[in-house]
Length: 358
Length: 142
Image 1 (tube, rainbow over the protein chains, first blue to last red):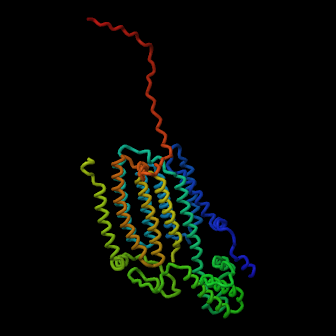
Image 2: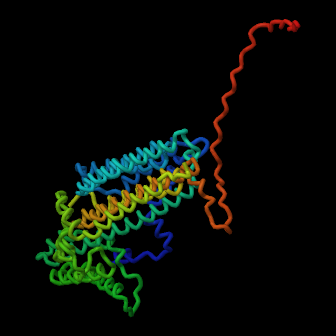
Image 3: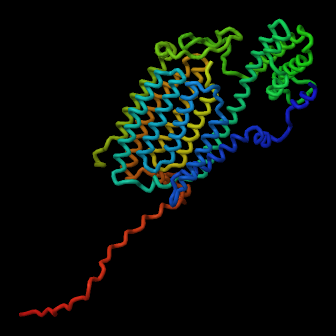
């Protein structure tokens, strides 16, 4: 058990090396994606469409396998893969088409598959309004403008891009940064899962029960490596470092007291309390209990009892959304109406053909 | 709770956002640039609805509705601007407007090559058919 703790020491190395070590699949994917999108971008001369499509396809499939960990081959998982794949492929087609009409139709494809994702997320009203507003109104208006503006055929503007390599690189640097942050945050979710496990285990009776809840201590310590306090400073006033040290000491003691059930339970309860402190100090999405929230937008999170599992949004929520919009969000709804009116007036004024121009 | 986790929806939203940013930066056609910006908004909307679903309240969905309203306003204004710019330069190329600058700044030079002009069709040549007949000398009879 002691060797395990030596392994669990934080690896002290340069941030760049750690980035490469932790996020090499994402960096590799982003590199392949840069190559693919760059080859697909409209450029004068011969475009290597086949190679670009191959590289983008490899990046898409590898991303789907490596990044997305959906659980089972259920209907929801299959639909998610289908809609997400169509949305990403449509997005790539939108930014690489030479003909703007085809680009607008690819945008309609992106919008429709996004609406499928909305439906999977239990947002039927948003799905309907997005189809009506985007696919119905915006795409048709764009097509009108394209046909109005391109009566003499394709222009040289569509056949070349502006700094395609730098733009693609910038986009994928942003995407890689987002994905690495998401990956780290996703690993942090397991911290919450372990806190839940510790809390349940500290209320269990027998040692068999505790071990069946906790599983293997080896894996726990590997997963919680990011919570190890950085340096053994003798005196510190930082409450986060203190809480991390208390948490880690409690987990450490618990892993050595498997024989005595009361001590194990006490240490697990200590780890749970210290973990909650860490969670509150690191900041979380749950608002503090002092914030007044109305119940019209769903159960306010600060009203949920401590430790109760979060329940997802039910799919039948259109009436509740309307109630939320016209109580909590009444002023924003009115402001959005004013904004639409002002935008309409502005568009008419801008697009109006003046007498002297004609 | 659900076989597809919040993390997966956030990844899809991030990918759409990054693709839209690439399109906005790299394309020259103003309409495709605005379509790319709308795609970035779609990525954000996926994120917000996913948070609404997994946190069990409706605030994310209400926010997406306001995004829809702002996107509709943006599309109306953008199309009006595109039409106005098109009437002035007879083209949708955003690089036609890169000379807009302060008086003391250097002008931006568009260094990318234009696409090669299409090869000119060679004029048809008639094959010589037989011997050229002798032209009778025309004389004017006055």
